[in-house]
Length: 161
Length: 57
Image (cartoon, rainbow over all chains, first blue to last red; front, side):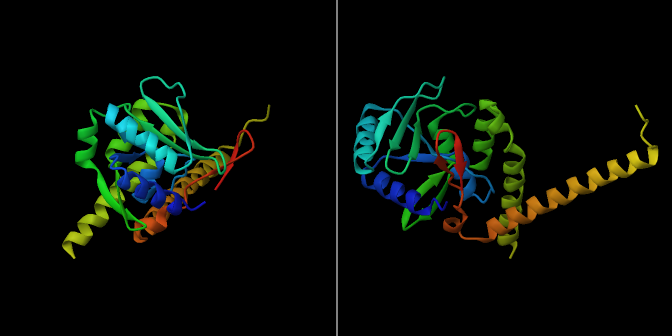
């Protein structure tokens, strides 16, 4: 299923509510060109009181409810929309990465449906998946590493040409 | 149990190596194709949940 409409809507709602968050996980990897799939959209954000208020507004606009599933370490807030099963995970902590600022400094900006959205670098995605260590995370690391190498190769080619 | 013919074993090993090489080449082709697309066209990646445990693209 094409995630472009959902991602464009999400980027618009985040920008309108000035909630800065960085795409991470397989959705971010797909934006970088990795042939992977996912059931949800994962985002890394700063868990501050102000951002929690913004998150409530984002959930309201998206007609979603905020759930708190238990996952160790991640400080996870899940936005779930019942009518179509849309699932967006906001994480205040990510395994294997130092800080939000660190991930942000390596993130790439993309434009989806005319809206700017940040995606974590493939190096940070790989680090987080390696640290999470679940079977489904480890299974895609080889694909992500090959995509990172190809992305770097094509950037070098563009710079030369 | 019947012992495997060493020739047969060698062919099987070579076939497995060729298959691995081919699947790596196919993966690289897929990545290069995705990279040639604009980012908005790389997003056919969302799996929809069906029932309790199944998903589909």
